[in-house]
Image (cartoon, rainbow, N blue to C red; front, side, top):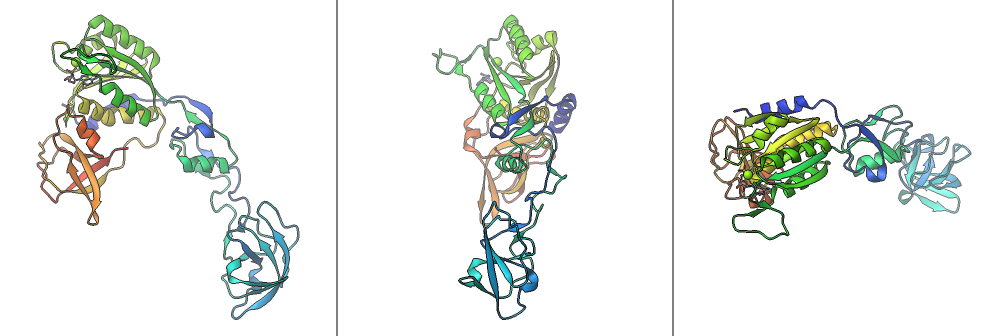
Length: 398
Ligand code: AMP
Ligand code: MG
């Protein structure tokens, strides 16, 4: 038996190099992983500019008390630069985003002044008010975005604000998926007595896509040695990662172990966790291999715990594990010491705190427990039964 954490570490140690970089247009780069640090070639904003529609003045002209009159000498729209200099006693009408005219360092919002023809009456205002400083967003030469960052909409805008329309990202890791089992049939085809429709390949498919991987769907393989061998070798040719479900426990038709012993270097682990103990991990050719359990909850959970961080590392991501939060248990939860247990839970904000309950029956074949939940409740190894009011860790679903 190995612990969840030892298993994760052992897997991550096997993954050295991330996938190679490729150039993509920013318009196609959402959710991709930046493959190089992105330095700013210039200051953003490139010049001091007005934060409001109003009047630019020299702060020396701002009266300490009462009011004074200034002469409006020009109008300055965003996108234009004032050629002259604002002298003492003068002001320039300025629009939001227009560069500050030479000689001016403070802007009055138009709502606080009185204008009559070319005369402007102003009161007191603090020096430098309503001016956005050159480089206050990003300074030239600094790293605007670090490599390994997943590009969200805000990063995309930051990149284009630096004038770039292309970006270097890691190639999406390719994940070949296979379901195993004589009883497993394709949805949309007739089902005979004793057969079940494939669930795992579709939860795994969605999981891979959610993690930024590219799915190669290789369908269902029967519990037949030769077929399994051929299909796994084929999968390893095209995938960076091969993921199967089923066939890794100790049943008479659990052939994955035997076949992998012939074609790859694979370890079989009993992981001290609930649900989903059996797990196979290793290599077939140049591909990393994960043999996940057949039970639908167990296979999805094993994906989250073991495949996802590996996929993230291969994709070049900096953060491999999700953020956890603390919540108060509002029901008792049974827990065996010595293993990590994952309950499917519902966490919600109530009475000024996060409250967690389970989704009900927790059997590892009950996939609807995943569908009803919005988080995993993570109960650590050393912990026993959980009483109402205790604090538990929760990992929100993506
Ligand atoms: P196994 O590890 O192959 O013995 O499978 C364990 C349990 O998971 C059995 O009840 C299988 O029928 C079920 N199972 C295996 N593969 C799938 C699948 N792709 N979709 C849904 N259930 C599955
Ligand atoms: Mg099976």
